[in-house]
Image 1 (cartoon, rainbow, N blue to C red):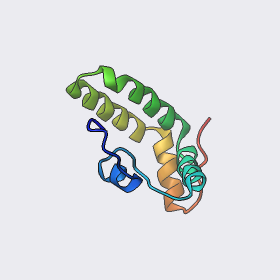
Image 2: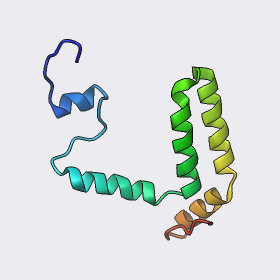
Image 3: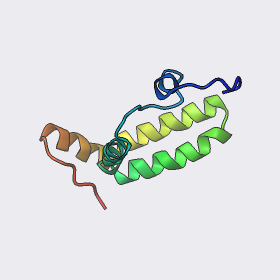
Image 4: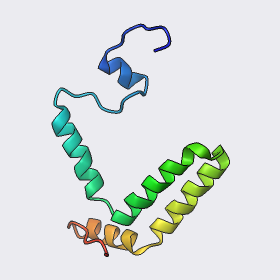
Length: 96
């Protein structure tokens, strides 16, 4: 980008600028959204909150907060329900 040299979508993926390259953008976006919507609401909300904070944190603090959140969420009722649903091959029923 600094040189002004053009690059295509595949090159952008290789550089890590994008995670998906597809001809069917609406279907890809829908699939990614379904994955997010299937997740535990609290985990998604807390992760989004943390991601907004991370840029302002130094590296060690950011990693510590990510680890702490992960530990907290994996000890919670959402994790228990998520693992049970996976074992039982069913959709999770998230606590309100």
